[in-house]
Length: 253
Image (cartoon, rainbow, N blue to C red):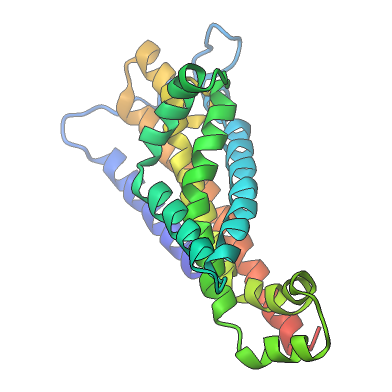
């Protein structure tokens, strides 16, 4: 309810701005005319939702897998493995996503001869940059598990991977779900940067419509509303998962 109230407050503020605004005449008609594609402008703008969502989902799925694989060496007793973890994390945390995106799209064909389309380049860049943060989230969550849990697993003769699979990770996931949800929201917002290399997602479509309709304020305001609603839905879904896991934990599942 609190998030919904904040969303309604933002919407009310936007409506208040559109109703005043001094000498500026708001032209919401801009989303109504038919484009050369045979769609209304609002349909054209909303058509980028699937590209934004799919790009973010694929990137976050890959980054979670990479992040877990990078987090495990950071927990090792071997200095070389811990050093490998720190090099990876610090390297990709230090690079801005836009810079990584441009390098993957324009640099990989030159350096490695790998040509990626705009969507694939966006997924790779987002996944690499986000995986460094995911690695730290996993490392912190795993380290928060009481030592007695791992000692009990060792006393049962479980292998390292079985111990992680059946004892440590199920408990750690409950603790790291909130920051993982925040990272998904972060990736969802950063996906707008992929518009610079031509991916036809929400921001790219808005930019294209601005160049043909010359109403940037109305179109970008509508873009704000699109992201606001989308991220609100994602945040509510994450909160539902948190409550579900907490209920399962109380019931001893």
